[in-house]
Amino acid sequence: MTADRDPAAPASAPSAAPRPRTAYGKETWREIAHLLSNLVTALVGFVYAVVSVALGAGLAVTVIGLPLLALGLGGARGIGRAERARARRLLGVEIAEPS
Image (cartoon, rainbow, N blue to C red; front, side, top):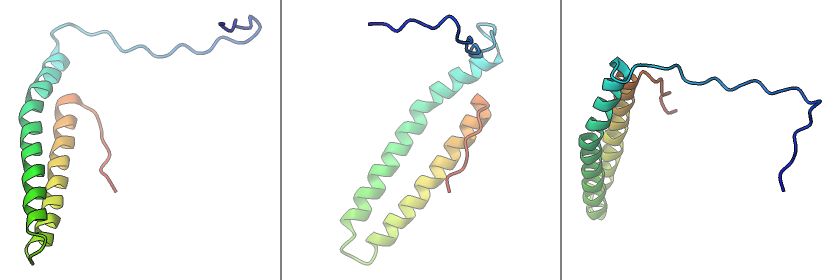
């Protein structure tokens, strides 16, 4: 059953539609560059995360393991910072730094 709209109710404000742009403008090429570079950065980030967690967890029984996990977390935060900078540069979006 669908609800009928009350004709006496005020019409809601129309949502803002995105600004039309040319098919091959500057923004399009930046978005394509961002998408193509995602493969490389995702692969590097995945390998870094797997290696640092596996190595740190494997060595956690020794003195080296826990500091290695902490360094791995710091490096992952650095990768995240680089990703936010890449999104700012290529897509023009502002992503807040984590607390």
